[in-house]
Length: 108
Length: 112
Image 1 (cartoon, rainbow over the protein chains, first blue to last red):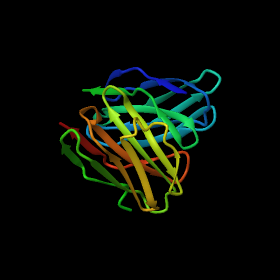
Image 2 (cartoon, chains in turn purple, green):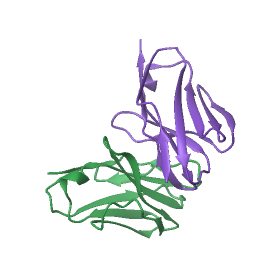
Image 3 (tube, each protein chain N blue to C red):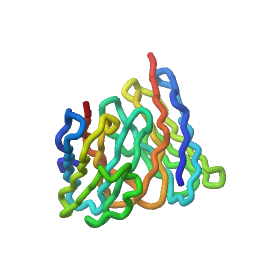
């Protein structure tokens, strides 16, 4: 089976840097994805790590360590619009299991 | 591209009634997924298709749930009979690679 754990809530101020962690236990694992979901909206893809290391996409970066069964999403230069829920997801090929989700609140 | 299209966007029905949710994936995508999201259980994969063939339906909660994909551009998720505990947001998603899934806007189902 698959299990991905995240902190339930993180609060940070505008302009700051925040890290959202994800630890996983999976019987099979192809890579770690991150999705963003605003209230009332649909999940949207942010990043995917197939290999260990850091992937950078603009203000967002994602990290994976397979040996530690751990990954994180790093958000820099936080903006109010970044207030949303963030999910890590992993699994075998197409079959994704989503993490418990982290609600990020960005304050002025 | 219009993205993944789902209908209806909202559905309110009474317990015992049949509910049919519809999805049109992005053209050219070969995988389609049905998810359910609730506060208690989070985002759960119900079933997914590859090239219109059901590959894994282990997430389908009960026999009351069924899904079909008669062609590459259409899929349905049916609940018969519906129960109050089925109330949730149901998302359809499609993909072409293993890396990125594109989600539709969801159907918010309320069963009274």
